[in-house]
Image (cartoon, rainbow over all chains, first blue to last red; front, side, top):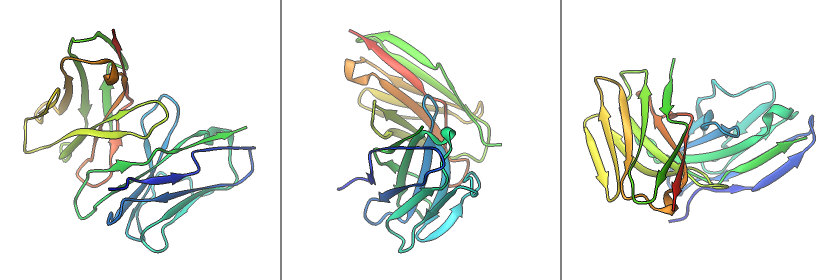
Length: 114
Length: 111
C-alpha cells in the first residue's frame, strides 16, 4: 500500500515570497491533516479536512496560510507571504475518517525562510 | 485546553536495557493514545496505539500502558537495539479525530 506522498521535500525561499506544498493521501482515506513541526517540537495541527470540507482550521494563520482539497483527494497548502518564523517541516497525514483516528504521515516538506 | 505533557525530553540507555517514556493528558474525554517514532529527515511513524477501553497493549518489544484515572500513559521498549534510537512522540485525540502531540523524547541507545 502506497503511503502519504508529499512534495517538494525541501524548499528555501526569501521572506515575503510565496510557497505551496502538495500532498496525496493514502487511497481511500477521507480525512487529511496538515501539521507544522518546528525544530525540536511536536507536530501542531494546522488544518483538518474530511473529504473536501474543512473540519478544523482554528490553528491556521489565515492571514497568510491557505489550504484546499478540492476533489477530496489531493491537497495543497500555501503560504503567502512567508515569514522567518514559518521555517519548519510541514507534514501531511491521512486517516480513514468516520471515527478512525489512526493517522499516517508523509515524509514532510522542510521549509527554510531566509 | 488540550494539553499533552511528555517526559523525559532526552533519554539514553545501554543497548539491551529497557526504556520508558511517560505522557499525561488533560481531557478525560480522550479515548485514543498513539505513539509515533520519528527518525531524522522522516515523518512520524505510528508504532503502537491504545484505546481507552484497554489498560495495556504489547507488540513484540514495545508495550503501552494506560491509566485513565491518573490520565497518563507510557511507552515501554524492552531489549533496546541501536535502531530504536529516534525521537518518540505521544499523542491524544481529546475525544475527536484531531491529535495533539507531546513535545517528544529523544532516545539514544548506547552500544
